[in-house]
Length: 239
Image (cartoon, rainbow, N blue to C red; front, side, top):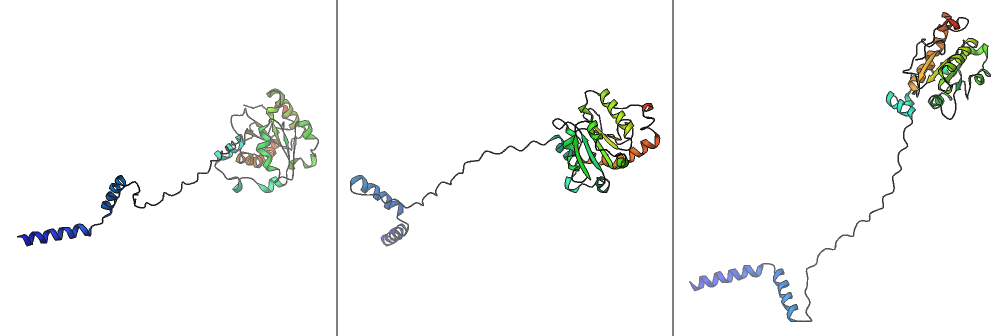
């Protein structure tokens, strides 16, 4: 029995001595430190903490430029301007375009200025009287006027001026625009004062359709006698 006991004790001691002595060494160092002023505790090595990441200061974000009314209309139309296909480029290339509108306040100028590079010529004036200075009767069918009727004092003044213009220049395509129109109208219903009417602000699809429709509407209105010598008998529709 004593031999077996000695054997078990020896085996147990062997197992104990085979285990790491890290904790015992640390405890012994603590005891030695407490009893000896010159003693030092050997602490296990720990990996150094990584350096704190440098945080770059955030630059203030530039607020996006708010979209203009015309840009919002174009976006709502769901068409890419670069892939625009509604415009009759050949028709427009033969037209001299005159825009009648106040430069400071008119939405029409911003809505149609993209036609400048596509037309035979392009200019902006502030009154219908100025527009007539560049008109040539022999080339009337190659001339197209965009008129912002909101520039007039009231609707009566606008109607009188447009009727008089149509009476003297019936062959000139006339596209009128106003914020007060309830919708675009590409028919001849407002033929006494214009071949086509646009609700402002107007997107590029609407402007292109107006360019395409106004010459044919003008020819039809002249054929009927709505503009020209029977102008005074035609009904007025502006709402």
